[in-house]
Image 1 (tube, helix red, strand yellow):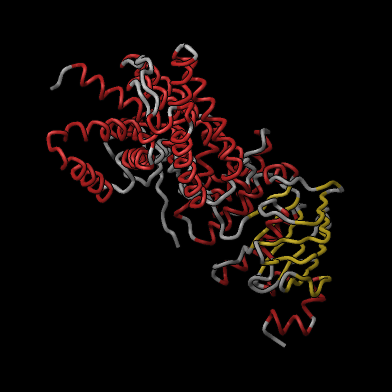
Image 2: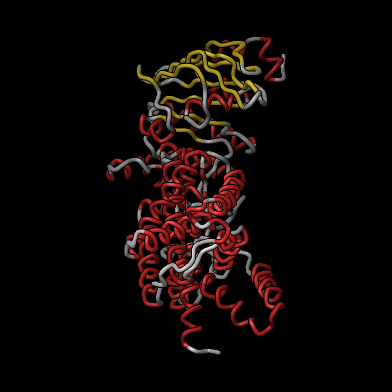
Length: 303
Length: 233
């Protein structure tokens, strides 16, 4: 059972999920916007790239970039009309978006309708996925350490205050949403060229929620947490496969257990480097959700 | 400095501000008093670009920009109601966030010293996580953060909200000191007595309409206003 072909398949799925989860991590974990429509962006990336390679014989990487670009454009259009909405309403709008994307692919003959597209060239390999994921993690880390990333975190922390000090809140929400959509699309493109076929049914609401669960499971506001969430929650159902129908019950129970014992997620807003620093310091001090390594004095009386 | 003409703000079917005119001159404290739901905060939010409005607003002889960040750039800064500080950052980091749009490191450092001398409490607690400050200290921090953007006009929304009487006195003393620094203040307050005592001019806002205006000292003597807002005859 544990041959390389099988393991490689799961690792590629980890990579696919990781791409979507990293995108969601940027949007939800760092900018504070929940989306239940990322399966839609994934679908756009998957379908656009598949059509490019299959019908127009474009090489995979440019096809993937085209898929990501299409997804970004879609995010900018949707975002322009919905990012002015308050958090919950935006969330509902993304939910509607995700479902409509699926239904549109379901009804367009060009994209194969409900039967989907088959015989897509199976280009995705473990190595390719790994390289793309490493680049994606590196890019996201750089972004979050830049002024732009910090602006997004400020918006998550206190939107009105961010506006009051002069951050262009709407623009940064748009940027975050667009990058997030592009990440999901890259995941979709890898997925399409791994499986070799596509069906609208693959991109249902459950897919979106699955991705959101991974982000929250790993810990909002942590890139390392997103990686861990994606890896663990992709592997877990596979490890439980021998329990047949019971495996989803175990999967659900595992997620519930983690959320009860660690509501802030596994990493809880910390990065692996923070953990390492903490370990080096001998765990002298425990602090709140955000760790500022150069912070020595803990505040005193709150009257 | 700020000229508001025929301002209207609506939320869906609710007409919160119905065509009001307001003037703020450089260097003065102008206060808007009125009861809950009179439209005081809507007025400030319209000036700072947080809500949409109809009407004209002129700042320093030019049309007021429409987007919040451009308004901050123009030199208007809002200290929002309910403080809204960055709870996970330290006091110092919060203050630095206030200088978000500025690049003049030396000037920022000087303004930081000014804020510390205005609010010694913040200097004592600069390394403390802001979320652990008391309500009064958080209000001070929000005001300090506002000053860090080096504004010409400061919009103060209910600075005394939820504070102990002693602290309210301190906050109003500081408001006078900020005026003495040469800043202009548009103050929205429910504590009409304190607000009128500190202000140069005042407007009374009732259900979206200005029902009285004039020098603050005159309104303070006005028997109608004393009865309605100050609870004394």
